[in-house]
Amino acid sequence: MERVARGIAHETQALFAEIRRRPAGSVLVLAGKGKNAADALIAARLMCASRAACLQRVGIILATKRQSLGADASGAIDALLAGGARVMEWSGERDADTFLSDGQFVEEEDVAVDVVLDGLLGSNFSPPLRSPFSEIIRWANRRGGQLALLRVAMDLPSGLGDGTGAHNAPEDIFNADVTVACGLLKTPLLDERNFGVRGRLRFADGGFPDTLAGALRAGNAEGIMGKGPLCRARSPSSDKRHFGHLFIIGGSRTMPGALLMNVRAALRAGVGLLTVFCPESVHAAFAAAAPEAMWVPWPEAPDGALALEGEFLWRERASRATALLCGSGMGNSAETLALQQSIVSNAKCQIVLDADALRRETLDAALRRSPATPLVLLPHAGEFARIAASNGTLRETCAHWRSLIALKGAPTRTADAMREVVVCAGGPALARGGSGDLLAGITGALFARKLHDDPLRVLTTAVAWHGAAADFVARRHGTEALSTTDILAGMDTRFLGTESKVCLINKGAGLR
Image (tube, rainbow, N blue to C red; front, side, top):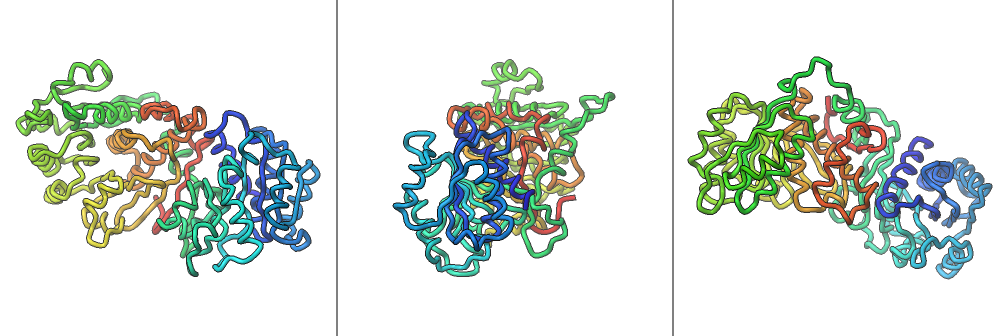
């Protein structure tokens, strides 16, 4: 329990840093009498003791008599009261409003407290919602952003339940800005109907074993990031050829920026050699913008897209590539589609497809190549709808196209035909045009580097690194005043696995 609460406290502090430069100064705990109440109360105690926070005001609203609390929750309350916390047993909205105002919790004029920790109800709850829980949740939801700058749910937002009973209306579910999964990801958190109430997903490691059956097991990314090859010293005998040779084919006269973002991300992701095939009209400018890459000018069609006649340019160099990235900014003209189909049917190396290359005709052509190494596909929801298998599921679509897929979203899910991973890193900082182009460049680089012998682990590492970089930058600069390429500054591997905890939830067999 202490381990979970420590993770909750850490994630709360980190997310608050995206909102304000100052540490959180006040917290309100909404507590029932179960495990979630103990988690929230212990997390508040740990926040008070942490050097990363300077909590001066702690309030606790109990949905039950204090005498009915368990030993862990009671002990946490005693420690908080000794530090000056105030507690009330729920007696109505008016009394709750008075409790907050009398306690002088106000840090900012229009907000009662900095953080609310929702510890009312857990996964054992089944609708309908009963008093006083219904009253407390509706009060908190009505006050919304005027109650707190950050609303944090433990495990599941109170009132959501385990998904086996009736589905409550949104006003009867605690509306969270973030839900911290406590060791096991509960299925309702991945139900699209609940995205509006669960907020962002984060993770607190509960120490559950990898072999736990019948559950979505959560684990941090120590094996993926913190203890992986990205966080180890490179060999003193390293040579650029040891880190792969990535080919990138993309861009157009009207959409050149996507290609340049591919390139900058791939270079930041440590690829040894990079050859870029670009529209001839942007060749000189791009070669000056990223001189580390080898730029090959490609003839253009009248609409500014890459012309089919230039295909010989990559074919005569193809044997050098360890991976090929194609699609970003290419457009969708008939000539472009024909070029993509020719490329994917003839390339012998690992292929990564993004954006305009995510079309059924292109994927059909890729299936005809020999040997047919698995494709890597990077669709957002709209692109996934375009290529999805008949039943639309992620793993079935992977099986249909003999591919690995990163389905970009909040959160991003990576999968092959047998396994699925949910990566909870990243957030609103990535809600910008071009963030997917950065991911494509990172992904292409890591596959070119042959970072691991498990392709799904390579793909998951790329997604996790991309998300961790966005989190890193957001905690220092907020989520508003950023440009997409600012995220590249967050790809500092010295922080991976330490400050930038990345959340993974395995479904199916684990990653090797």
